[in-house]
Amino acid sequence: MTVDRRSLLKYAGAASVMGMVPGLVRGAEQAAAAKADYTLRIGTGLVELSPQHILSTTLYNGQFPGPLLRFKEGQRVTVDIYNDTDTPELVHWHGQTIPSDVDGAAEEGSPFVPAHGMRRISFVPAPSGFRFYHTHVAAGDDLNRGTYTAQAGPVYIEPKANPGAYDREVFLVMKEFAPAFSRGGDMAMDMLVGEPIKALQQIGEKADQEAQEAQEKIKGFEVGYELFGINGRMLGAGEPIRVKQGERVLFHVLNASATEIRSFALPGHTFKIVALDGNPVPTQAGVPVLWLGTAERISAIVEMKHPGVWVLGDLSDDDRGHGMGIVVEYADRKGKPQWVKPKPYRWDYTRFGKAGAVAASPDETIEMTIVKRNAAINGFNQWTLNGEAFSMEMMKPKYKVRQGRRYRLKFRNASDDIHPLHLHRHSFELTRVGGKPIAGIMKDVAMLGGFQELEFDFVANNPGLTLFHCHQQLHMDFGFMVLFDYA
Ligand SMILES: [Cu+2]
Image (cartoon, rainbow, N blue to C red; front, side, top):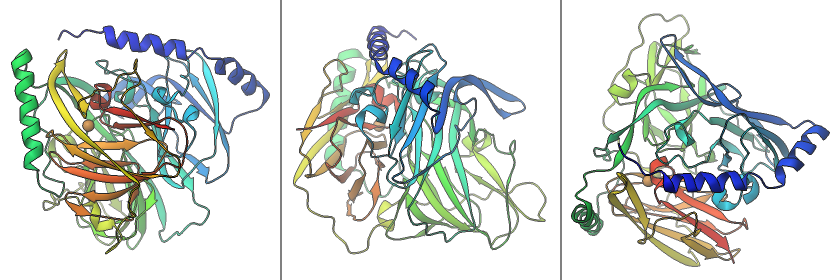
């Protein structure tokens, strides 16, 4: 594989310069002055997926997942971040409405945590619910960087008032390990509701043709994985989740994958969805299967009323076979964990929306057409939004927004890939998915289906540079990003 690293090296160079801002010295002085509420240490360590599968990667505090951080809504916290690695790092507080300099994205101006240095940050956690933290550096062609490593950990921000209709909480972090490049195949996409739109397929076909004529290239690189786990353990290698009949268990599930869409089922049980991306849903519908795009979170209550020893796992036999699952064991039940393949189920966000409601009208609509240029950059697919790929040097494309205005983003996907769309520092309201109107669902990541459209609204209520990107690491690193800037 020949890969030109010039652009990536240029980016890394800019990164180390940005890491040298005065914050380093100030941070160290502050650290000496008072102890932080939380400390994160970024460093190389081992993950024991099973006794036979121990691998080395970059971790928070020597563990995967990183420690569960419990914050209180509205109560300021300080976090000391130490970087024991040789490269500058960024910790992004995913799903929180915090200032740009602590959000943890270089594009927004957050300073890097220098190699072998530290940075103290302080912010007021919000909104309440299930969030997470993860690295936000570009990986490019380096599978030892970015979200291909094990730098991810859950955050739970306690609400001021806790509804509490469950007996206990279990946090589950789904993650792949041992990544490798391959020439991509097609992503399965029939699990999302909605039909492909012909006009978008035609735009995609035209881009394919152009890429082929220009470079005679085939499909670009994709990433596959050898090993899978939940909370850092392969199926059967960790402790089972021990439950009692009649217990109501609130699962907080995070898809911490760098690139993959994940599914989840527990034979004979139903998930009652109570929150998406940590935000309570208007309609708590029951579903047999969960589908989560990269970085999505689902909070769901399962009533334990089907005694046995079960596999709670991914629908893909291959991924589950390589570890993507965890055993659920009822008290006094013994035996081999059972898996039963669920009936096909199409994921539909609108089921959890506010019935009959219509979202508020936007002040402005911004349309974005997403096109894939097959293998256009050294064998990697390039992604363009309205014909433009994001450039760190130019800090473009950049859209101006005005405080207080409500913006509707209308995405038109002219590719066959699913895109987990992510907006930083703001929550958005889904307003149209798979051809259906929807209201009342607040999220920070949403899956846009292949050759489909999706609309969401956000209110410009948190001044500062704001990044929007696809959360698929390969897509964001190769163009799928824009900035919003307050006028
Ligand atoms: Cu994408």
